[in-house]
Length: 336
Image 1 (tube, rainbow, N blue to C red):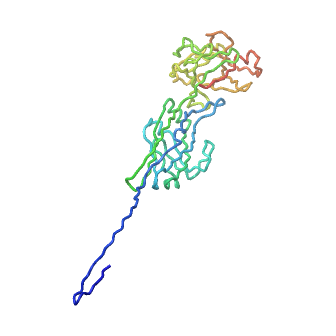
Image 2 (cartoon, helix red, strand yellow):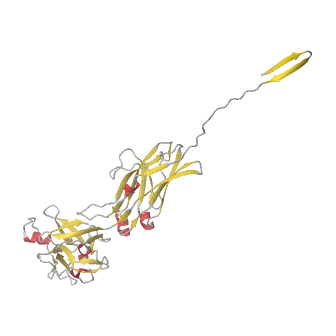
């Protein structure tokens, strides 16, 4: 405000000013995110054994990305580490969760697809989240039976990472790891009549070693791998865990069905029908006959340790579990 004062013929001026002070808070946005659910994708894929146990080829789990900061974020997802060959053989599908996220859930047409070596892009509607919001996903991993067979014995443990961005340079990340394996089914095989388990004579499945029954016990010598054959659908090589380079053979090399010699373990490279096996459900639930592709049934009539396994060219037809032939030709399987 300016006030002019007239004194005589000369004008005079005076000026006044005033100041005031105050406070203001300037806040900076924060970026933060979490990732949950990835470890629930852990699985051991198995090809299944016809008539005995179903295949394990799919694993589905709900996965949540949460924006726990104060700025909206745009998201991407990536993977690193693990076993390259197995990662490339595992298919990955991602879609927004509609509330149900199990192996029985139908994959929608909007799902994105990739592999565990190169993850798919996040699907439409799941690429960003406002501050405090979450993205609910279903993630499914799967393998074909052929890929499980080709990769059997391998394990992978990659890390999946989500990255949230504001602009180009302001980022936050969260990660989760998952372990997945490919394997053949492993069983302990117990004879119904004796209550004893298939074993290898001498404890090592070397070429020419006999197959016997012994009191059931933990360990590789009574562990049998069922490996699907690639040339005979529904049949399997039976490999003892002490030496998976050999397979269980039934019948005789000379094809003399009347001889029915003890089993031996020989090279898996042969194409003999007597090396290809199939468990056939028969009689009491949970009881199976072991039949090779030549039609021979595995037989053991003894209850004494180290008794050899033999074969019958004609499988017994009795379904009476007290029948001697039934007990000799029927087995139960315990997956290990």
